[in-house]
Length: 228
Image (cartoon, one colour):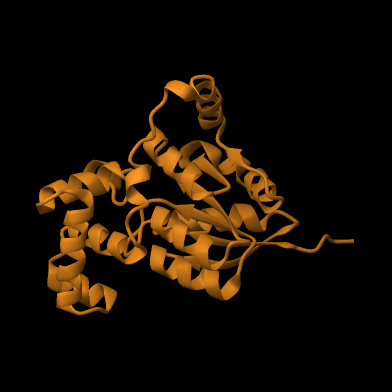
């Protein structure tokens, strides 16, 4: 008897070749069905709300809405869905943000495709799953938890989803008018969001906001964006 494919998965990655490769790996499993694909963060949120998959495999660096903010929005609208972050980066700041938002795990893209099926299965059962190197770092850090300070993830929790979207586009080089068109809001609304961002973060120019966006994982710098 052929087992039913009872673990539904949405795959979100802006690189078509990588996205299709992930889908092929997952579809080869007897118990996993890929029910949707998204090429950007906003589409991932839309499909997650529509399809309610058991697991979302999400890249961090995506256009329109980065994977971290998309994951936050999905967890709000579909709390039963489990999020697995799949990224080229293993920086502590990214991992800490993923843990803080309640994601099910964090996998390093170059090294984890072979364990992706296992990660999806564990996530669907409600368990956490990390790439071995990240899991080791987390265990080591647990031993020194009392002396450790929380990184920028605390600060980002002060921002609304819309503010994060505006910040991501402005930091990526979009003009206010372009940002308004992209988000479907007025130019005045963008300017108000910018003013609020500067007040909340105590940052008063675009360069400072861009540096914050990079350090907080809202966008990635130009060097990181070239890594696949």
